[in-house]
Length: 127
Image (cartoon, rainbow, N blue to C red; front, side):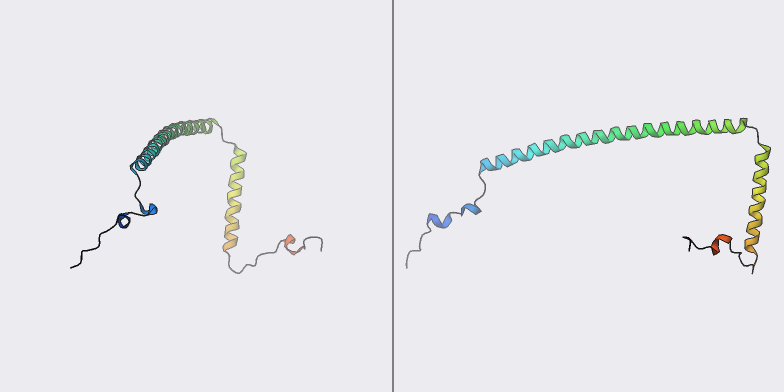
């Protein structure tokens, strides 16, 4: 029998493109990843603090708006209670309500053609 051919060192060497990274390169990558993680953690902490502050401001603004609304409502009640009713305004409102009721009744009448307004027949632009 013939002796088997022995492997050479060249058979076991990896090309440079396929070689795994060196330990020093891995350490550098880990350091970079840690620095990025720490910076991200700090940024998230700042954003969280800003969100909490914004929520507190929103609560404060809502409370102030609620107080302002209650004050305005109280002021309007006082103003309405203290103001005497104007007879001429009441009379005008009653007449306006009667006119509206008549117009609605006229709209409900069947077979009544609508009268064209005088402006409907005029041409625009001086033609």
